[in-house]
Length: 394
Picture 1 (cartoon, rainbow, N blue to C red):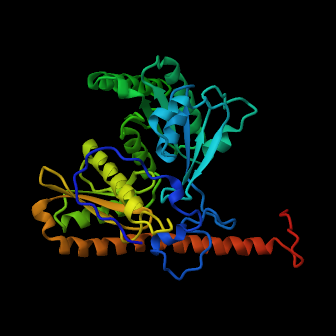
Picture 2 (tube, helix red, strand yellow; picture 1 turned 120 degrees about the vertical axis):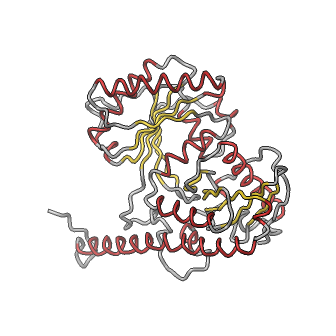
Picture 3 (tube, rainbow, N blue to C red; picture 1 turned 135 degrees about the horizontal axis):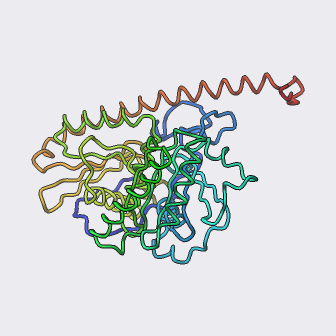
């Protein structure tokens, strides 16, 4: 496929990339550029294989009714327009969804109805919390949040007793209708009340992270990025590689993006500016949109994003944005000055080294998964008799 290269200014919103641009069965190619010779059937993350012992991190979405939990999930992972979420029906049962088939980011999302009493004696909440990596509690900032804070405290304390390793994240949601001063005031008040409740219960060791979010801007994507990053064991290595790359290339800021969800899985150690993050999201949309128009073959085959994909955008403030494909699911987006971009050859060479290092990092994970898969197969074979009948363990 011929990739579309864009030289222009970012000038507006573009439609996001739908999941069905990627095939469900080609995850493994993410780190081999599609021409690797490994015959691992389970994909790069191995979750579709029955013998894989890899367990996907579980993210729980909790909160009161109509707080916006399902809307968040639909906007971030299904590319639903924020305006369309107004017509979503209230969730009345636990909805579990795997996020892995079309994206580098891989985990389960459990959306809990606001009215469900999951601490009912007949409800096995210990099983749910035991396998949870992150618990996101959504609070409607435009509503009275006294009841929400009470439910937050009950949920966090119960979950912590079962699994102290859970990351507790609080989304102060629907802040798009509030002024900046009112947002800060709300966050400060909720932060103080929630932590005071924990202190009164003698649970000061529980850490809550707070985010101001809205589905009508990029704040929800940035918040989810920070939640997901905590579940990536290779994050310190990725950050270190990015720091080395930018320091040797004259780059001011760099992000490693999951193209499908527009969640950035890593960035360098410099602070993240919201406007910079929004420009990155817009750039990814531009690349995908242009590639869909000019990059696909005549019969519509192929994908709009492949190993030839790259883009250069010159902004009107002497800043250059540079996007390069890292894997079929990941993109590196960089910000640098025009005078630094004159050394594009050096940047491309350093990027080649960076890309190779990324592949080596995840190659270790692949080897671990293969050994686990082989071990699981051996255990399975030991539990079966020669005629194929499974022997139940004593």
